[in-house]
Figure 1 (tube, rainbow, N blue to C red):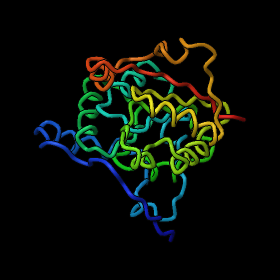
Figure 2: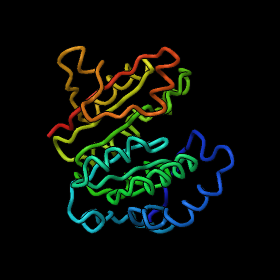
Figure 3: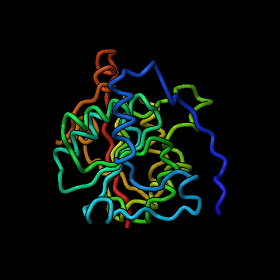
Length: 232
């Protein structure tokens, strides 16, 4: 049996009291949407997930920290030929996603309601064709920058899970997060694909603006859209 490494977790796991409908979504839907045995209790040997069995051999995408789930459901609806896994530890966001899944009727999603690092432990190497990190927690204080996702603690296992040539998209409205992203992501084996300012100033063609982005725009912050490719 492999022991779980010590991992500090920062951020909220639960917010305000869930609505009765959200509690029902969690009780009725979440287990069936599991990507497989991710938790250390259920998979102490950290056996890789069988993604072919999960999604019938479809290409697999990953969204880290899906917030309220609007982008995740949008991508699933627009790409029925792809299987998408979403990871999010904030249970209120998970409940919101489950409601959106019901209303949209999408069936090509799996949900990990926990730390993305535990999920990446059990993703097979070179198994993910695309990954998204959209408006992650900015941890604005300098002493907290090590908590950001764009550190090698997170980027190295992500790179291991991505196929050569896989696309990694990052959206943020925080200039210093852009700085750290551009410094750290290439160190993990990625190349930034921007060739002109529009490549990071304009959203992707299949983008749907999330509630976090709308809040940023209302408060006068400027979104940045960064696209990387996993090196061969």
